[in-house]
Length: 88
Image 1 (cartoon, rainbow, N blue to C red):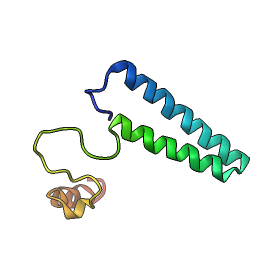
Image 2: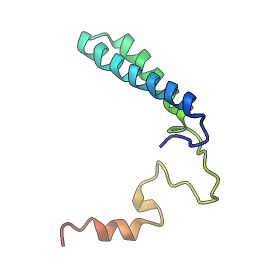
Image 3: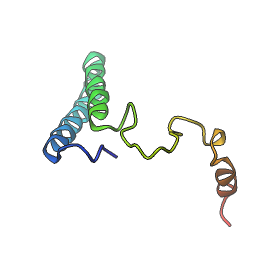
Image 4: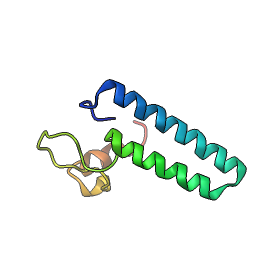
């Protein structure tokens, strides 16, 4: 999810840039061009950070950020264990 505080026009420009970079990754992989793929992946990362999808959190609800943690190391561990037992 992108930062809702972004101006809609800016957000759309960033999304367009992201999609273009993803297409460039696919083309580079198909062509076997590792350097072009690396550059396109760097653009994806930079654009996702600009959108607020990576990097520091943009919300300020005061809740702890459990992103990038194993669910078993969070307060959701019991819920996860119960929900991953398979079909009922």
